[in-house]
Amino acid sequence: MTALHTISTIRDVESAHALEHPKVSLMQRAGDAVAEHALGMLRRRKSKRVLVLAGPGNNGGDAWVAADALRKAKMEVTVLALGEQQWKDAAAKKAYAAFSTTKDAVVKSWPKTQHFGVVVDGLFGIGVTKAPSGAFADVIRHCNALRAVGHCTVLAIDVPSGLNADTGVAFDPAIEADETITFIGAKTGLFTADGIDHAGYVSVNALGTTLPTSSGSLLAHADVLPLVPARRANTHKGSYGNVGIIGGTEGMTGAAVLAARAALHMGPGKVFMGLFDKDRPAFDVLHPEIMVRDAKLLAKDESITAFAIGMGMGETGAASLLAVLSLDRPLVIDADAIAAIVSNPSIRTAFEAKKAESARPCLPFIFTPHPGEAAKLLGKTPAEIQANRPAAALVLADRFASVVVLKGAGTVIAHPDGHFVINTTGNAGMASGGTGDALSGMLGAFLAIGLGAWDAARLGVYLHGAAGDAALHHGMGPHGLTASDVIFEARSLLNSGLDHHHEDNTEE
Image 1 (tube, rainbow, N blue to C red):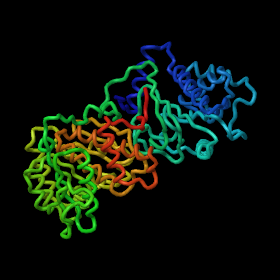
Image 2 (tube, helix red, strand yellow):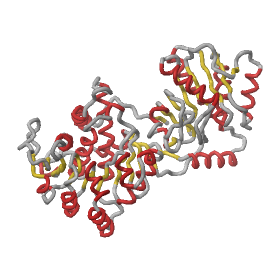
Image 3 (cartoon, rainbow, N blue to C red):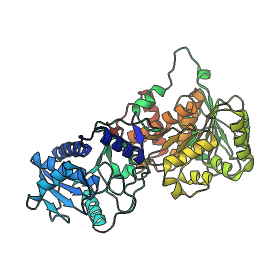
Image 4 (cartoon, rainbow, N blue to C red):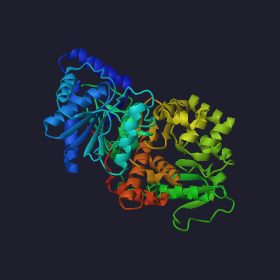
């Protein structure tokens, strides 16, 4: 498990290490690690040309040390130095002095030569608090433009310049890296929001330091593999629960159908689909295994083991949500069911009563909002939610005493006890209609089979993203990837022990 840490924690560890080991230069260790990483990238590019972008702070100090190490490794190194140097570390000063005697090795603007095997970004580190400007902004934009046309690959030191390491929000401009080598501990912002587009593949080097425990971590293959439900030979359909999918008003039936089909492919005993559409079909022609019911009647069915409600439900399903809540069953709350909580005081009162009467710190509920829905639940704007996704998810989890799945790039799963994980699977092709409905159906199925809300959310979210990645590998995305593609890939992965071609976006 890769723990996630905040900027303040990283700085505390740096300060403590400096006091305990005054003769050890973390900057030297970091610079050497950057050089080693860059050498690997250069070998893959079959190039010896490297441009190092060195800023004025400690990130720039790391860059100078890396540049010196790369020069000693016989690489063709040019340093683009910006700003007044502020570092005090002897290792950086020594590296800087070594370059001051080398002709044409240090420049103040982008060299005329546009082709470099690797550009090392050491302009800004974790301390960035505002958008880069002036020459810094020009260099960042130029670097991004050259990378976009294949003239270089980019390695970011610690965090891509211009990216908030806590929240993953990128200033304009911010470096778009192919790879990031981050130090001491993994930073939360590298794995959610803009961080995914800007950080690329992330490796973590602790530099010999020791970190305290953290409430956040990455959700990876090894974390979810033990959660895959086992199936004994001496069982029957009643052993795996009945899942009820409730939604699908007129014109939105497809949302509930996708959720029901996704649930079916996860292996529950029975799948019931309750539709609000008065002209509902008698059965699902593609999957007649799904039993179609009137939504209002299904919401009162005590034989249902777990529900997922809200997908295409419209504004008329508030009474059905209250009915489901009264049954005290595990529940996935999505889409229009979330909107009903915002608009209906009776439902909010019902949730408060559930919290008050339960001795459990976490109710058996999973909320699945996208940023817009999360904003409505918290009385904020979507931009405010995106400004700190983990914090928003944790507030929601605490408010509703439920597991919260805040969807988006780097989906955040939060527990009311304060723990959260960030998912490492999924791709931009999944930004299409119906994929969220499929996720809700998958989560409902895992609840029905018997997983707790926290385990069901982690397994479902990871599997959902991994299925999208598998579809991408098979040529079905990112353009034109559909929810149905994801559903079929998810079943295959579930039955193969989640074996897939996706590599978790971090290594230590």
